[in-house]
Image: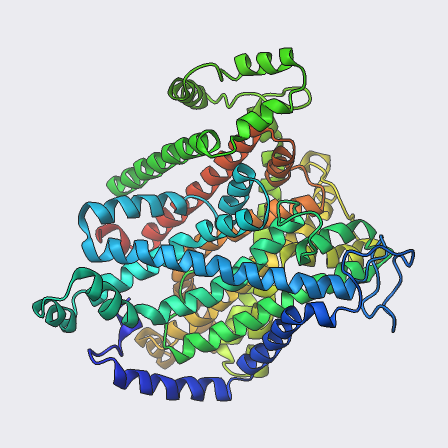
Length: 295
Length: 316
């Protein structure tokens, strides 16, 4: 753990400059990260401009059913004659939104719990850690499935379910970072100055603990996107009439022997986005000098 | 050693009891009450009341809890509220061998890919082979398992017709019929799993190859092959074993999704069908069993780790 923060001296400005340079050096030379940024940028643009770019209404049914990719329907049509390209394009919005919203939520509450547990120790730490241990007894995806089963499907429920499943990862990392940083002299200095606990936790400790949290967040976005796709695929996702990548695949799977494009393209979209985020996460890990975190 | 094992066993048991408590109360205490929804599906007023009595829902929640908990300790998880009202335990025990078979085959496939890939990547660092393994690992981690499952069905079942696309055949009906139904789902689940293990083997091997005893082995004039396989690889496996425990979660989650693609009636299929039918006794039972499976695997990994590396048992 200690080598994760080997370069976190007390002053905040200097290492940040160094970091920025390293950041540029790593991203400038890492072809995988550049590929990731470009692909992700394209999907992001596609998501934002879906209303303009989509050639058809994603839910419009036509008599042009199961036609192969052509000039008219670049990725073909499904069993109800809906344009696959338009559906996948709209699906980008949901996937990226769920990925980011989920991780934002998990990061906020997970880091909060982890910082409180690590900073105060004692019974606060005990209670929070027992909860985290309990969550550790379930695979993340099973937690999400069970929560959706209990709360019901829908966009908000899916986001909350996946966020809760990821909460413990952030809490664990934040706690262990705080435990190490708490021993540093600059924290003693802050205490002597009479700063409040809140100020020490969030202005002095947290900024120095961000590197592994950022890396974890990046990886988690890719897992969240995969998680949402899996839930949608199982019929436990956003809703039956919102085109999401998992749902499009699930709808198409009965026809894959006759219409391969229904099986290939939605999954390709998921894989490209997740791959891009993983490439970026890997470069960030090098740039921020974070050792491999648990999967 | 015995003390360590006992301590870990008691710990795992406590976690399981807490899990059971959580699983029970979550369904009963959430807003929107899934139980009410389940009762609404029952149909007639009589059917509703029969279900209330059968499930003990006319009792206070805390009484219901102890009743359920006591039965659970006796191995009785209640009955399905759907179809022929089979006992949940029977449903789960019918499903379990299928999921275990699938997990086993996926595991073997994953390890069979990961070990050579990881060793080659480590011994030829920065070569084309290393880059290839690294790209494979990224792809394996980024591909949704259900998508890989669909692609495998399109290629190997629908077009080449080498392997069956769906279903499960028990081992008692012969090895090949059993195996042939598990290869495609096994690859779909095992690929992501192998990516994680291969990466771990690579970095662990690279670390071990820096060790002093490697230099000693080389100076004794041993061949490269013996040095790698006798000295480096076994030591490199130690950290890999922990990761296998963690990554086991991926295997189970993978099984839940992939069983549904291949229509294998294992725990995952039972869980998802239970959710679709709002059959909460079945859902609770499946979640409990999956988490027990997961806790026990991690316990086994920890104990194995303590056997291999004595430093573990004495710290903490």
